[in-house]
Length: 202
Ligand SMILES: C[S@@+](CC[C@H](N)C(=O)[O-])C[C@H]1O[C@@H](n2cnc3c(N)ncnc32)[C@H](O)[C@@H]1O
Image (cartoon, rainbow, N blue to C red; front, side, top):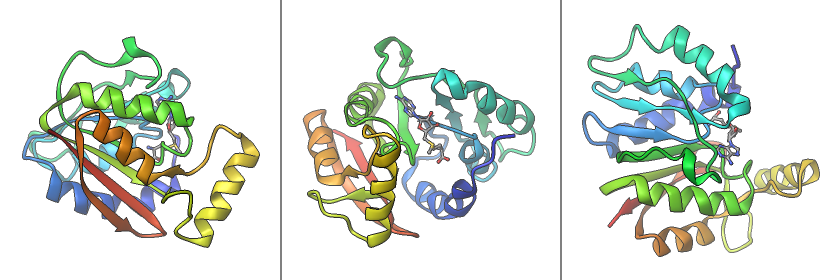
C-alpha cells in the first residue's frame, strides 16, 4: 500500500486539532487524500465521524486499496469511511452535490497550482453547510516571506521540480476565503514549521 511517512508524523497533532474543532458525527470531505492514512487514522478515533476521501484519478487506485483493506473494521463507534471519490478541484463537475460540516486537506496546497488552490477554496465554500469549516494543513508563507529556512528550501525544491508547485501564501488564501464567505478562525502552529488554517462559513 502507498505509505506516507509525513502522514505518520503529523496525524496525531492533526487529530488533536480536529477533535477540538469538528462537531460530533461530522461529515467531512477530504481533498487530496493520497495514501488514505489520515482518513483511517481519524475514523479509528473519532466516534461518529463520516469521512469522504477523494483524490485525482491517478491516485484513486492506491487510495481505494487502503480504504478497502482498512476502512471497514476497527473504526470508532459509528464512524464510517466512504468509498473514495474522484475529485480534481479544477473540475467543477467532480465536486459532490452534498453539504459537509468540514472540508479538510493536508499537504496539498503546495502541490497543486495556485489557481487550483483558489478553486479548492471556492468549491469548499459552496459545499460547506452554514457554520462548516475549511481546514488546511501544511507549510505556508506570509506576504511572500517564509517563516522558516526549511520552508524556503522546500519551496525552492518544489519549484525546481515544477514551477507550478510551491508554498502558498497564507495571507492570499485568507483573502480568497473571505471573498467566498469564509471567515478566518484560526492559524495554528503545528510541528515542523507547518500550520493549520481554519475557516468557517458565515
Ligand atoms: C503531498 S500529497 C498529500 C496527500 C495526503 N493528503 C497527505 O497528507 O499525505 C498531495 C495530494 O494533493 C493531490 N492533488 C494535487 N492536485 C490536485 C487537484 N487539482 N485536485 C485534487 N487533489 C489534488 C494529489 O493527488 C495528492 O494526493
